[in-house]
Amino acid sequence: MKLKTDLSNLEKCLPKNINPQKKDEFKTLFYSKMALAMHEYCKGKTASFPKAAFWGSAWLNIWYTPGVGAPTLAIKQKEDLSYKLTNRANKVAIISDGTRVLGLGNCGAASALAVMEGKAFLMNQLGAIDAEPLCVDSRDEQGEHQAQKIIDFARMVSPSYSAINLEDISQPNCYKVLDALKENCPIPVWHDDAQGTACITCAALINALKITGKKIDKVKIVLFGAGAANTSTASFLFALGADPKKMILLDSKGPLHKNRIDLKNNPSYYKQWSFCQKTNAKLITTKEEAFKDADVLIAFSKPGPNVIEPELIRLMAKRAIVFTCANPVPEIYPEQALQAGAFIVGTGRGDYENQINNSLCFPGILKGVLLCGATKITDTMALAAAKAIAKRAQDTLLNEHHILPDSTDIEVYPLQAAAVAAQAKKEGLAKIKISAKQVYAQVKQEILMRQKVNQSLIKSGFIKKPSQKMLETIFKQTLKEVL
Image (cartoon, rainbow, N blue to C red; front, side, top):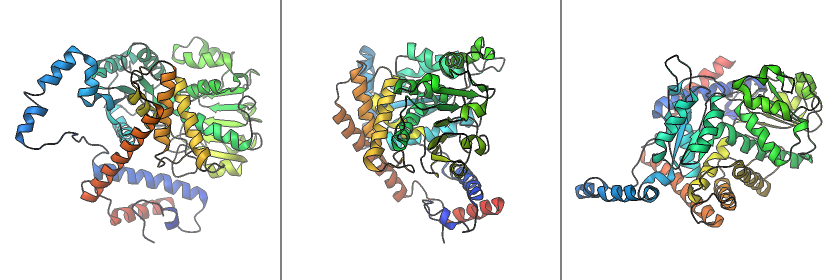
């Protein structure tokens, strides 16, 4: 059987007797090898294309000098005209210092560029947004990464963009940068690792609870990992109605609680200390106690496998909900979690069922923000998006194997963009008068156009497909290494 270019028959090409763990190992390694080969093949994932036509040399007098002086002077007199006379209204800056890339740690700014290009690609195809990766070296002369450098950089580039997407910045700098820019940046700022992850996790949990018949204010929730993703998720869960007393966050030293004096006076963990005061009312001190009878596990920690043992899943309540979202490998493989008694399992990966990945929310949220001219992005706007995402799954296909819409479902992005714009208007944050219905229609039309352009580039040969030989070679090499 030949491997298809879209890789839809990947598993069918594997030996029939391959065991599940080897299959998981194969897919992880195969996607890594393919990613490396294709990134070199395409020389990255994004490029810049003009929106204006080149009808002849005379048009250079209009698009550039001397004609361009007219819009320049107009913007000088009224800066808001930059949103009408340039592409600023649809531009997002993706800013990272590469200090916490995926689950891979401090990779550096240049390494982060591969991930940020991926974000830009998704914004283009799923949100019809023009995004630019801006990876910065935030180190001082002593080699220490400084939050203030990122803050200053973001403010300096803000005249070129409509919004800023912060990404892959280590704690506590990620919190410091977001808090500072929310207060003093002239354009809205979104931290996708924090707010984006929290948004999509809440959407997944809304539907998982609906399927299991459990109520959010009654369930015991364990958050494995206490970084930006889970601390933000915890805050969102409070807003959804979760009981802080029934919630337990765990870091590398165990459960957070009010007696964790190691966190009390540590300026690097001020966010975690605030959760020590709110959560874990029973002062649970071990992982085993935390997992016992837990209804929900949300893990954003370090890549697995075997970071979370099956024995811990067995301690959980009946019909347990398990979200293990470390990338590129979940803390425990889905097959193992299900065998250990989990009822609903989600991961951050698209090759397993129930992918919980912020790629399903940030394109739509940011597009909604841009179209309504929101001055900031609040948690309630993100929660409006979460509810729109959850409802889309409820209206199409909802069961324990499908708790979220597929990332290829283009309906979900205009729906959440409309919900975000409506919430921004409700909160008095929208500068542009546009109805939710208008937002929905415009976003859907623009996404369809972007995808049509992509297909045209493929047909023209500008975007080249990988050869069958490349696919087969990498497939065979990977299979040989795994088996």
